[in-house]
Length: 320
Image (cartoon, rainbow, N blue to C red; front, top):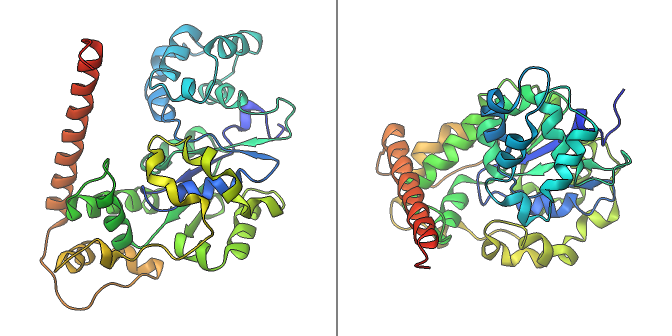
């Protein structure tokens, strides 16, 4: 039987969810437990799994390529992980599978004695839960959800989010569908509404601890003491400046959606939102088809990718 910190069982859990749904708050709470470590927004796992035929030859890992791919997005270096340390670990204990090779990366965040369970908080991994569940059969999943109208309103306020409410609604719907349509067993998935975490923090923290098979700890709700460090470990730290306060009701969607926008968004997401206990504004709104919303989302993501490429080009060309 493998120990909790053994690479065969790492990562031990994933925190996923559409952006602005409380994944950072969940991470802040869990990092208060002395036996839980949660790296933030790693981003490398789906890419490594897709590229596995390149770095895994069936009986071993091509460590040079594996390490380059793992560090390609800069997130591990930002977290202070040393690529040389990873190469030494791979050489000293050759992994027996692709999942175990990736687990070696997560070992670098642990104490090395099996006493710490290392997870991962990367919201976008919610789009890959099916693949992650197959690749890491021991991993648990925490799916953070929030009222879709609040998510859409919050995304509009972020410099990195879509200003188009229908594109944001498509983002929420796509994220929800990826999890709800997966074959993930119920005992591996815990869905947590942000609203419930705010209203009943003690009860929800107990549920989180039980799901991860650890005892609840008093420091889990003292996240405000870790707020500065936690927020600055995110890709967009400016989006989490309110983390240092006490748990309080989230900002209402009425502050960010005007006119018929809310009714239009609600008509698009109601079938996925209502089973979660959410309700929307009364009355009909402007109908936008799901296909149209997804087209708007794709246009936003293409535009964002183009802006990133232009920025990279300016940096490489010495103009930034």
